[in-house]
Length: 278
Length: 278
Image (cartoon, rainbow over all chains, first blue to last red; front, side):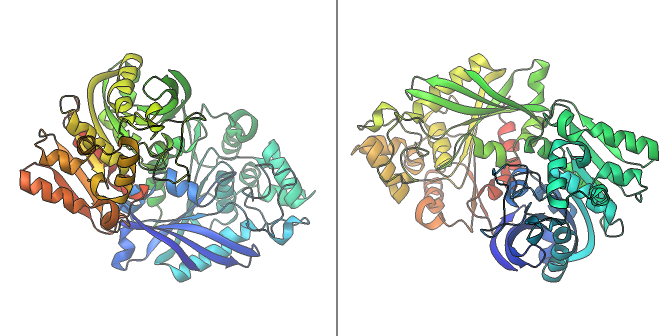
């Protein structure tokens, strides 16, 4: 784990690291915001931010404005990349934005040729936290949040590992990849024709199958161009209603799918996580 | 003035416009944040943000996190581009980042070939405010701030027009282009061998020549790689001391030249401007 850059921000440090990932079988970069409390030698809890399609570790770091609130609350924020990277990593044949590089979908691929690198689920759940907890001044207390494909990642990862995460939240998540074009393409290519594997990576299916209760907050913009075709928040609402699973789902009038939406409500999300991160 | 995009952010609108500029003799884009108060029909005061070398109207919009505070305070923020643009606009022969496209230096060029387009001073002082005051829900009360080359632009424009701006502030400004490599190159090429013109665009020279007092705030990071060679804040401090000109110059330990520095202190600057913007 090699420090590539370190820039002071709101009294803490916005750092970028590089490391060789065993799970992904390639060299990866990720970013971490370390709040000022860590400079006083304190170990702080960590919120993992999972980004959406086409993003790297930089989008959230530069655009979300999360550092101000993370500094105040004493929370580290880890910003992983969204797929394996490098010349040896296979990409979508048509270089489509919704599959391959920048589009790992937070699953462990089982299909050739993707299975040699696309193991983002194991990377986020196991490898990266182990690395970070060993090398940085953080505790083992963690939560997860994300946007769009990363909102899907945050929700499914938390629901599959309720003992590992104290809270989960999402902006504009893909709530049911099994029921939308982005998700159907990704699940079919990464996981093949395996209904059980698909369900493990579908928030709606996980809720319906009796997932354990976790603190959960979701924000969805009503001017989001992807709401009707890809995100389908109403499917999650129906699953919550039928199962009695408790989650706060907020529709925000006038907001679209962009980082301007995330920036507008990131403070709410960090304060929500802070209630559970100790 | 044509609206290119409009995105909701902190209850207000982050808009991008295109227009044909007479001053610059080309088509320009600029961005404006309109706070929520304007949707209630209120006319709000305006802070003009001038960006640094290589920037467009987008850098501040996406990275500074200014919208949150502007929304609270009811201030519109205008984000112009940093030079004329387009195929017909001459650029530095070597495509250097410090001259030509993205590097207008907020002067009116008098030298061929630059004088046909590079009139950023007139664009910022006259043309753009007239356009904005006619087309948007803003008052004529305005202030100006900026970063690096844009900090230089903000300070020199305010000092040359104390009746037009109620306050001025800067991050990491080039305080004396006459005394640093970036500035010497730009002033020589845009303005030729004309000492009087150079002095009109040099903050230190303007202060020394008895500029009228304006509310002025300056933040400078002490880990800024350009401090010793290009920014030279100490020259401004000396001029302030000798003349008795009142300005708050703050050195911020550990901060560099990036937008992470700007984001960390933009709230202070907007609150400073708000004390004078009515």
